[in-house]
Image (cartoon, rainbow, N blue to C red; front, side, top):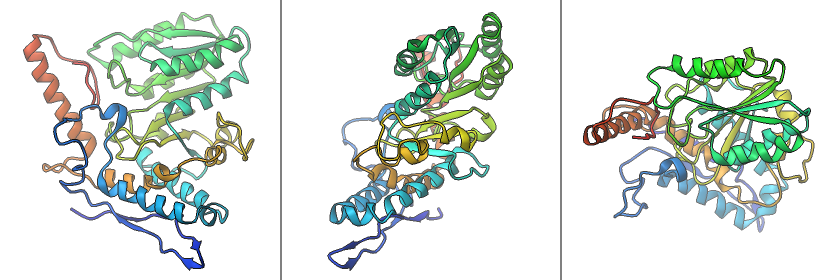
Length: 355
């Protein structure tokens, strides 16, 4: 297996007059990379808390040591911002095989923060009576976010029922299309959709759903792709064409807790969207504001390039990438459960499963 090596940028500084050398982290996957996990616990819930390998934890620790040695030297010379820019560029390589321009990706703490950023944007533009739609599979916290920010400004939230255990993508799209058509003409303003839903775990035909919302008049569409990176083979957020798409790297993407990426379809969207925490870089746009919403631990973001390298490099003994391997294993487990329970195939899922 070819080694994946990345230099952890943004960690050079002067401490007591001494120049610190940038840490070079080798992220070649090996069988011992997860030996730090509890030896008597089978960890299956990566969809919540992830599984970070030792080489990535080493990258995180290297930055922490540099930071603790001389934080002013890292921050006030701009090297922290440079490192976050480099991490956002690394994240972009996992979001799409197509080039993503700088300024289209912001790194935030987690998916809920991304959802709040988008909902706050919409709330400033809501007119009483506007409709904001979300799917029946939406993550509960995200529904609360929409209620807190959009309903409060007079929007009507409408839940679009997604048929359970559909046999085809067509059935899902037909159901959503019919419900969108039933809305009062001209009232649909914004749409909040799921890519790989949390509960139940279903991989949705997201590109088609985004297009449907646009056809029915949605001004902006946001996709909750919390589980997408590292879970969906051939992920291409550019091709999905949502206005906003956010995803976690600390779930299936081998990153430390917590770091997420929010992609905007164009730079103007990013510039006119703010971070939920008002801080020093207020009104500089989400990518800039998210870099310093007050004091924080930057280490998860600084280790993101190593995590992305690890994700790109990892292969199963059969030569499968992480996404395909996990998908195959979860389908095998689901087949065993269906046999034991006497149930039928099958919901469209990525590497999580509802049984």
